[in-house]
Length: 224
Image (cartoon, rainbow, N blue to C red):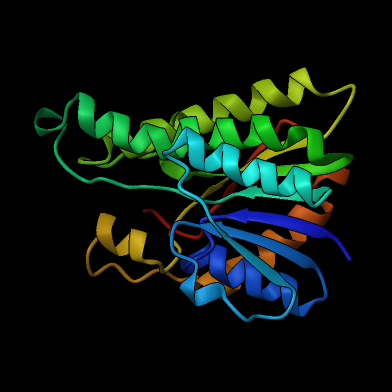
C-alpha cells in the first residue's frame, strides 16, 4: 500500500485517479478547493486547499506534519485554463493561470518534499501544448506557456535531486474528455476518458520512476 497525494482531485483525471488508487488499496490524500465529492470514500482523505493561496498551502502542510504522514507519490494534477486571444489577456490573466499551474505547483512540491520518501516519485501533469515544437492553438497562450514552464521545472528538479531523490517526471497529455478540454475546444470529442487515463497515470506514478527521471513523456492519441 502506497500513500499518494493528488492535487486537483475534485473532478476529471484527478478524481478518477484518486478513486482508482483507493480501490486498489492505496491511501490517497486528495486535495482540491471543493472536496464535497470526495467525502466518505474508503481510503481517501480529502483536504480543501487553494493552490493559488500560499497560506492555504502552508496550513495543509502543517496538517501533514502534525499527522506524521510520509508520501510515496505526489501527482501534481491541478490546473487552470483561461481561453482568450493574447491581445485581450494581460498581467491579471497570466498571473491567475500561473498562480495555480506554476507557482502553486512549485510551492506545494517544495513544502511537501521533506515528507516524500527518497525513493518516491513526483509526477507533474503538463500538456502537449507545452511541448516545444508541438502544434499550438490560438487563445491558449497563458495555459500552454504555463505548461511549458512545468516541463522546464520538472527537468530542473530531477537534476537538483538526482542524488538524493525523489524522482521527477512530467506527462504531457493530449486530449482527455474533461471539462477543461471542453472549455478549450467546445464540442471536441476525445478518444480517451478520464478513467482510461487514470489507469495509465496510476501505473506510471507507482512504477515509472524505476525507468525514468527528468523525462517528459507525451501521452496523446490525437491533436488537439
